[in-house]
Length: 404
Ligand code: PLP
Picture 1 (spheres, rainbow, N blue to C red):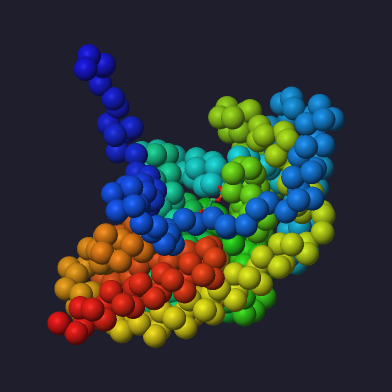
Picture 2 (cartoon, rainbow, N blue to C red):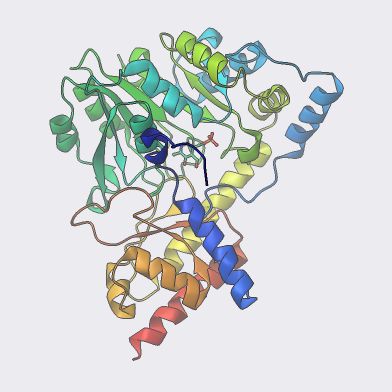
């Protein structure tokens, strides 16, 4: 090949390695001619509710297909402001809201808006965590600082450790509750304790990734923005992907009074605006009937209870009950010993090739936390039949080794 060099920056860009797992599962299906039970995908298996689809069709017919203002159509910004106000108990003005092609875009936009490259500005994010936090921090020239989330802390970080990690160079703390990959949910008390530390640092922002906010099962969802003094420095990020089964529509939103204008500029530079038709669909999602999304959330909760019970019935596996999202994150340290797997990724590969069950491993979400054992992640955004069949395959596979 004669192509000129690719930049070091490009070659160093990290990504979501979990995507490769799906490709592997497809290859195994092709090779064996058998169905793999898939638990690797972080997206609802439901169809987008009909009322939302009809609204999108109507938008096309009405000719709503030109560019929109960069921060979004006022109708959607208003709908988001009302949604934030009713679900977080904070007053959000529509002009503080920006709309982008998925909540994901706001991770990079926020980092770019609050850090400068070459200054040693630090971004703290949860580990294990959504891999885009680290990827974006490096891409934007900030220093990524992972903060360990531990099973013994109910999949939250240690508040004292947070206190020791934040310093004068820290510009951004990324929170994610409910959390991917563990399903951990931050309690009001934990949020207050975090806020107490954050408020000591005048140059510290918080990006609160609340993309799973409507999938909290045992208590009320709480946002750090509602802790006194925090709203001004918090970017409240959410979207329609997970709550309304709209991952492919690509609509996410963020609210912060001081940053909205800078989000708008970045949207102008990057994409111009989010999809016009999709924005109208999102207006219907937020303002229309909530019956279907509420039903979907109930189904996720039922599946959670089933998968957690079945996982805890498998030799060598223990699984804490996740408080939110649609992920179960069992500890498989003992199961690794039973099947002779070197680590979680070896276990994951063998589970795929030998038992035809596809999951992601802890290492897909950052470096393993020392002393926390081996974990794999199940996305239970799949049918109850598939959950039962997958758990049966995994149990039989482990037991077949146990007997040796
Ligand atoms: N944040 C977290 C923690 C996620 O798990 C995901 C998607 O998997 C996103 C953000 C991205 O959401 P969106 O589809 O709105 O870009």
